[in-house]
Picture 1 (tube, helix red, strand yellow):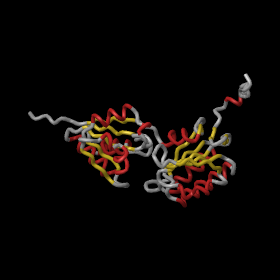
Picture 2 (cartoon, helix red, strand yellow):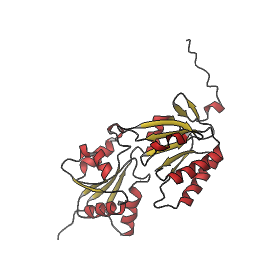
Picture 3 (cartoon, one colour):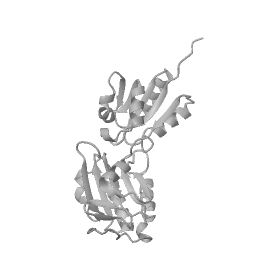
Picture 4 (tube, one colour):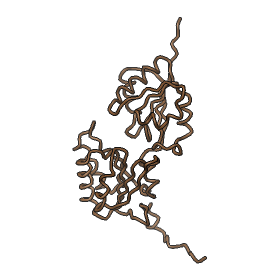
Length: 258
């Protein structure tokens, strides 16, 4: 009897793009895989790791194709790495791979390899804006209606969450989201804008809800925006969101003359 060897799918988060932000688990998963499936830009970011492997690339909005190819390759015995930037569960390919496998009754091993998502990568560049509760919201309205997105923005602002905005490519939607946040939070709340975090053309910008628009021409699909909460403040060129220690303790304890 002929036994078909089942393959495996790694859904891999490569982090923000720079080699220094890769994880050891991600490197091992790519090494073990003989097929790489990726958005064209992501394939370029890991091309130093893919020599001798079959690399299948796709354009933006071809996520269904990528998932289908990965599952079919795994069913034919291959070990496949489906590549997402950041973390594959945060607006990445993990949910789609699982969803398609479930709906098509495909019994193939799937393993998620977490990566540093944009929120964490960008926050590290800005200082410490995520030290308290935060909400992550994508401003991509390709799959989710804009009204639904803006409702989430308003609820997050009303809850005084630090708000992380992904995919701010739709400028009218971005303007409306920021208008809502400013309406709720006020004009002095810090805003951090990071373009191409951990990549060669990285740019870091610090503003407030009253001044962020001066950086509008810098904002594109690979930009992430972090809006602070009511306690966040700017110190030097960093955004700090206090954890709450100042409510219970005196933090003025350092003697610089000692």
